[in-house]
Length: 515
Image 1 (tube, rainbow, N blue to C red):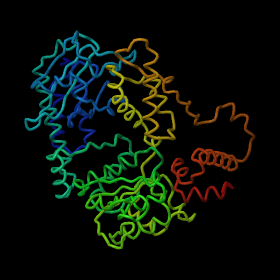
Image 2: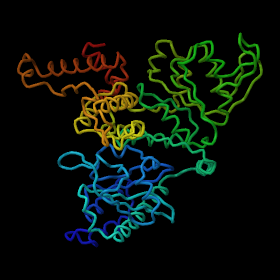
Image 3: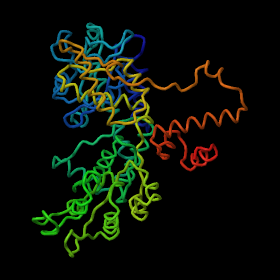
């Protein structure tokens, strides 16, 4: 501990925080700020144990993408050793175990290998909750720290975590049935880890809406561009709902020929059509009591839309080739990257079905509107690729991080996932021998440079002088036209990209002569 910072001066605010209602992220940040001033180190992190992986909740001195990583314990022997210990553990500088943070600790000259590592498990109600880790680039740094002092600090950290979790639990009004479903899945070993990664305001709003709508049985229409994660949102809604113990059945409406969609949805009886050699239950019957997710619902043929509407309204269906009614209890979640309101106006989608599906519309923001979430997601994908490439550490250079932040991501999260996979292979190909730490450069990502947000000074001087109103109109006309071209003529997507209400954009486009 540093002589310049009295222990009591640091601990008193933390003790006060135990009785204060704070957002979890802020509580953890204050905790690490205090510990960082007490412990001479280059990096410190708080990780939570979730099943067979460790999830970083807060970190100081580590690369920004660390908070998006999910460390599988089986892949990281140092983390496994820390979790098995009851107290603090210091790893020798010549320890042969790979360090999970190699290449991720920031210093003035970049990101280097870790040389000194110290960690302590956190226990809540005598059960392992997670880890507190400290790292230094100086191999002798932690020789001056008494391990019992770190253990005492770890107990205070555990108390801070426990207080935060209890306050969060009280703040969440979870229905009894929902809680019972969660316990059922845990006991039966059926819990599926569904996580939407992100800390941006856009993601915070989305997660709040998911929690809200999950408590109801409303039909939800999930909209958003291709690759934003609409199916993951549907899985999250189902997992948090009272139907979680029942099945979630998915159907991609665009992946089937029109002749098979009805049979897939409602089932068929023997002899209903050529090839129907026996009875078959449809997706609705398979999802009885649970949730049916209709992906790309905008691709559904018009004749099938009428039959789907009937099931949504009455809960009754008929298998193809049968007159017998079957009653089902199914919650429907639908997703589309189309503007269904436009499809209704064009006569390609039934208005009554559109209104029945969009009882609760839920828009998933594109990646370009999520700010630094791109780094968290990149970190998550890097950690997935690391064991596949058999390297100890995968990291992003500063230039690569800047390239990720400057790109507009027309393919969104799916594009990012594929790009990271390709970039890892490109980076590996540059090394004749497999390196311990593999760094991805901007060249490995091969992203186009970001468009300038302002006109160069020379271009401004070359512009003809005109009244300010005319110049503003000309700039708006150019900006809207460029955005419209980038979004393939989709006015709804253009309005979202420009941060405008669609009706306001339509009026502006008419005034400017674009529409």
